Length: 287
Image (tube, rainbow, N blue to C red; front, side, top):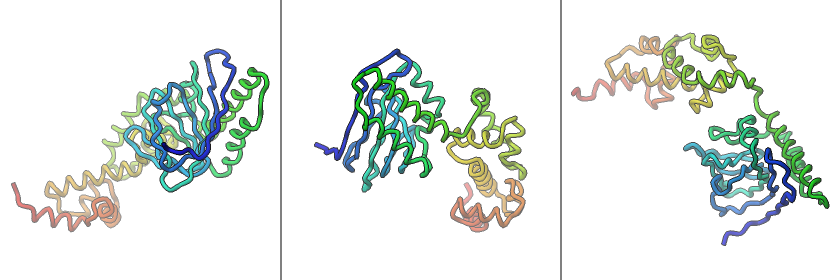
């Protein structure tokens, strides 16, 4: 049987209404052999705070090592799992909640299946930890007052998360969602343009550059500049494989104004220089 080094919980004895119901708060030091915990293990939402050590998150086919301090969420409608990072002493706090507005709060704080975590600046660690610990340091004779304290603490944590998120106008977010594919298609058409930048693409599509960059990375899982570089390198390889022999001309066709910089980027992505790639392609037997 797996041993839990430390665990404490405090349960809400008073439930009022259906909009936001807080179940309990918990604090636990995880043993290294603790198995994976899944969002599908409960019907409730669970907001976690990694106070020490780290966890390994798995979601949407991705695996992320999340070190303290950081928040992450388990949402019952999404497949999200976590386990403690090996060889680290990991301490987590959590609060379980449900209700009609539970998903709405998570969406507002952008804790979704694409990014169910938020890293916390070191200077905010002490206030967040103190907020959790305050729940365990008080006893309430009246269940109603306990519910008030539980709700106040959760709202404080929500506000902390909101402060950590880049401010994005909700109307702009709704406007952007139908155009995410348009953003990618625009870059796929214009990646050979040497003047293509986040600013130029955002301006062409009518978005703020910072917001365009954030949404683009969320959709493609890579920063804008890396996506453009990858597309250019894929095109360069295709040109060389189809008989191109001039490095400088290929560089220009791929959107580079400096052939030396093109060679440097090509070598980094393909682990071989353009010249060596051309020679190797020449030596291949023709079909």
